[in-house]
Every structure is written in structure tokens, then in C-alpha cells.
Amino acid sequence: MQIDPTSRFKREGVHRDRAGFETAVYKQDLFQQLTHNPKTGGVCTLRIRNTDKRKREWEMLQEATGEKTTSGAIDVAVRYYLKMNGNNAAAPTGSVEELMQLATEQGTVTAPEIADVLDVEELPVEYEQEWAFGRE
Image 1 (cartoon, one colour):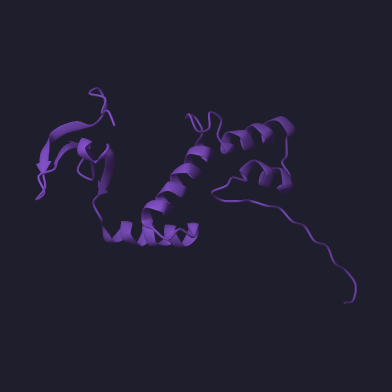
Image 2 (cartoon, helix red, strand yellow; image 1 turned 90 degrees about the vertical axis):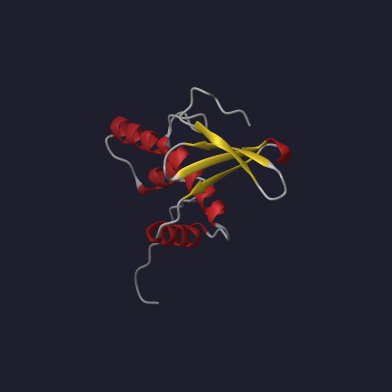
């Protein structure tokens, strides 16, 4: 992985572990640390300071996404956010913007139309309607 020198990351130094592997350390702020070890094939890790609040939120996120790991749950949440927000390579037009455009054009939006726009792999949305009357 190449770190763009104009990016928000600043090289803080080099960490050498007990096995002698050197890892270049880049810091973005007090909470995030990106490390890059060219000897491991360019594997990068992101370290985030673990607070009680974050730990509870990550546990809830794992439960909500059904993911077994915190990193898996965060991956799902990131992909979902990118698709909903838009303005990125993953989704130039986000689902929220698409829904707002649809409502503006039509004046109203039905539940099936909302479900159709918001349905993504990370959080499937489906509309079902059932009617019943009379005695069972």
C-alpha cells in the first residue's frame, strides 16, 4: 500500500517487533493509527482506541449485522453508509438522495417504492402487505 504524502496521515516512525520486522507507523489523529508492513505483503491494520462506549456500540453492531467479528460488522456498516450517502466511487448517487428525488418528482412515495430504493445487500428492505377480513 502506498501512503500519499499529501494525505491526512503523517509518518510517525518505525516500530520494530521482537522478530525484527519493521513497521512504518502513520498517525491520523489520537484515535486512529495506520500501520504498513511491506515485509508482510503490504498488510495494513487500523487501530482505534477502545472505549466503553465504542465497545458497546461495536457489540450492538455485530448483533445488528449478524457478523461474528467486529471488523466484519464495521465492513458491513461502512458499505451500507457509502451506499446510502452516495458521493463516492461505490455509489455516486446515494439511496437517500435517490429517495428524496423520487419524492420530489412524484409528490408522494409509497411504501413499496421506499423499500425498492432502500433495499441493499447490507440491510435488505422488503415491503409486504396482507389484508384479511371476516371470520377466520
